[in-house]
Structure formats: C-alpha cells, structure tokens
Image (tube, rainbow, N blue to C red; front, side, top):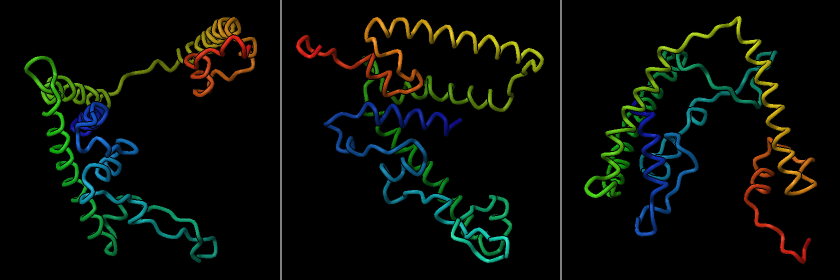
Length: 203
C-alpha cells in the first residue's frame, strides 16, 4: 500500500513542481524506485537487479554465451556466492524507499492544498487509503464467470467495430484522408484531435 501511495505522491510532487523549486529540474524518467532515487536521491540511487546479478546464459554445450539471464530471487537468496549481495541489495531497497518517502513528503508539505492545508494532507487523506484499497483488491481478487467470457468478448469486439466506425465517420468530416489513419496510434490521434488547423492558403 505504501509503495502504491508513494508512487502517486511522487507523481503529484514532481508534476506540481514550479520554477521556484530548486529541484524542479530533477524529473525522473519514470516512477520506479530506480528512476526516482536516481533523480531525487543520487547518493542512494538504486542499481537494477539485472546490473548486479545477471550472468551469462549457458549454451547447449555448457559454455557461457553472450546473452545474459537473471536468476530467480530465491536462487540468489540461497546461493552462497550471491546471498550477501542480495541481502545488501534488499536492505538498500528498504532504506531508499524510506528516504524517498521522506523526501517526497517534504516536497508535498511545501505545496498548498486549499487555504490551510498542504498536499501532504491530501496524500494522507486520500492517496494512502486509496493505496490500501488497491492492495486489498489485488490480494482478494474477484471472481470471473468463465462461461460468460466468450459472449462478453463477442460483444466487446462488436462494440469496438461500431465505435471505430463512428470515429472514422467523424474523422473523415474533418479530413478526407482520415479513413487511412490507424486509430490505435497515439501520434495520429493527437494529430487529428489537437493539431492546429491548416491556414486557408495551405488548403
């Protein structure tokens, strides 16, 4: 729950940064622990497991190949050669997660929410309970009627086809060539939905 809420807090804290924040230029490449610590806590940056524990994959004849593979975590824990490094890796993860939580909470305390509260209050009031709900849902799961799934899939495919037909009918009214676009392409959708119209002299 804490990890889910902290990721949401990271998104809020970083996305809300302004030019007056001395750290606003430190924008991570993602919201993984490795990306966040590299951007916000360089001294505690996490090294990926693949970097630490990958080993050459054995060929059929038993010799080492160029491709690398990552052993299962249980093997890393039980193997004498890697057990100490895996313990250090896990302990560093825990320390980095706590330090990241404190760093992000400090950022949230500096962001106003409403007249008297801060985004840290919002985090405590909404994101933490939401994170707990997500982990409860993941732990409990939900039942699926397997016999009904084929019918649901058939309806979904038909609904998708109908929706695409409506979209193309609208898109072709905006641009005749839209019939050739790929509705699954984010770039093409952005172009037709948000690109500025061509000036009259270019038409």
